[in-house]
Each structure stands twice: as C-alpha cells, then as structure tokens.
Length: 205
Image (tube, rainbow, N blue to C red; front, side, top):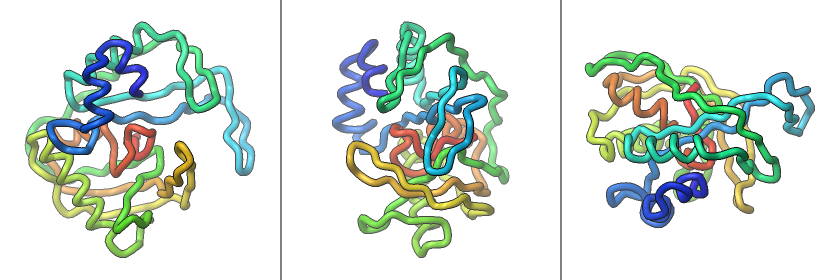
C-alpha cells in the first residue's frame, strides 16, 4: 500500500506511515487480499489462480484519488512473495447510503483484528465489543461523522492466524449489526473494521 501511494505522492505515503491521519495514529486506508477465482482448495494453504480481484479503498478523497492514480499506472502488485499482474482496474460506484441513522449489517471478508492490553481478541472474548465500538468511534471522530451505536456480533468465523512482518495477527471474520449514519457506513465500507486495515484485515464485503 505504501509503495503504491509513494509512486504518486511521497509526502502522503510518508505521513501516513509515520504519523497516521490528522494527528491520529489510525490510517484511513483499507485493502482486501486477493480472491483467486477457481483456485483449488487445500488444507492449511492458500492456492492461487490466474484470475481474481483485489480491493483497495479509503474514505478520504485525497487518499482515494492517489490510490486510483497509482493503480492506473501499475502493471504488477507484490503480495508477499506472490506477483500479481494487473490486467485492469475499476472504481466501485455502488449506491451510497444517504445521511441519517438506521440499522445496518456489515460482514467482513477478512478477519477483524482487535486488541486489549496487547492481547488479541476474538468474538465472544471479554472486551471484544468494547474495543470494536472504540475503534469505530475513533474512526468516526477522524472523519467528522456521528459514531455508530449498539454494535453487536451476529455471526463469527473461525479463528485465523497470520504472520505479518514476523508479528502475529489473530482474528476472525464477523457479521455485525449497529445503528449508524449512512455516511459512516459508506466510509467504513472503503476502510474496514478493526485494526491493521492497511495490512488487509477487516475489509467489509
């Protein structure tokens, strides 16, 4: 992600990496790992194929526009040790929700990462909902939008563990319900739930 941003705006990439956004450590950028179409299933391994999408997003127009320009000029993406040839890009223009609060369900396609006192949390753990609510409120504050209320987990996937630059990332996919302003829902769909969204976690389906 930082390499992509750096191709178009080095100052923005450096600021996000070092300081976060608007004096806050959170980085309003999200990405979902490649979804390989037709890849064979294998226990304990990720299989690849020649075709599939990767999603990138940001609720901040300044960052989103840099991402679009960067991807438009990219022929190859490095995903770990896997090289992905870029055959084309498309801007997702799904209908945006209007302003105003209502109940909404969100489901993630990648695990949500949350922590309490340095410990990874999973759905059902003590403090899980508190930390998820805190994360969402923090994101709403950065974006200048009303914070959601009444977050509940409706369904959770199995525990998943990943290693990112030598450090563990432990979480699970979730389906949640909350009372939220439509503008915040639009934003979080291009950012994600939880921590480490810039590393591919918490992307909303």
